[in-house]
Image (cartoon, rainbow, N blue to C red; front, top):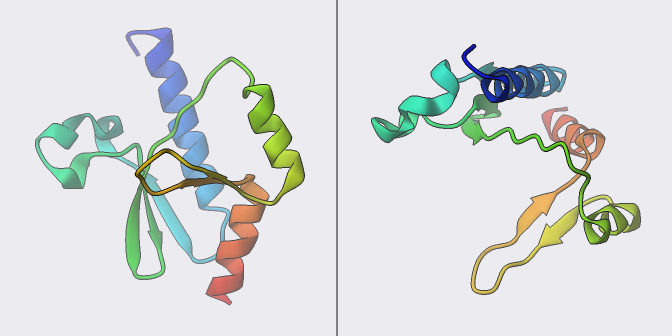
Length: 109
């Protein structure tokens, strides 16, 4: 690795792959070169590829040293998942890994 950031990125991409592979019915693999070749082909972007059911999903892995903002932390204590809304766009849904795992495994059964 040429830098601490690249090493950290690789570590969290592998961790994401490992977490996803603990879910029954999910097969995940880290993308070649962290998806750096995505500019050449959409098949090569994303950090991790996850086969869930009949679909393949591109998973991006992000890690930050700072804590979540307080309002985000509070939102996660109030529900199993949080919808983040931005004007004139679809919401982004975030949830703890255990909720995500339980949801996917209930569908796979």
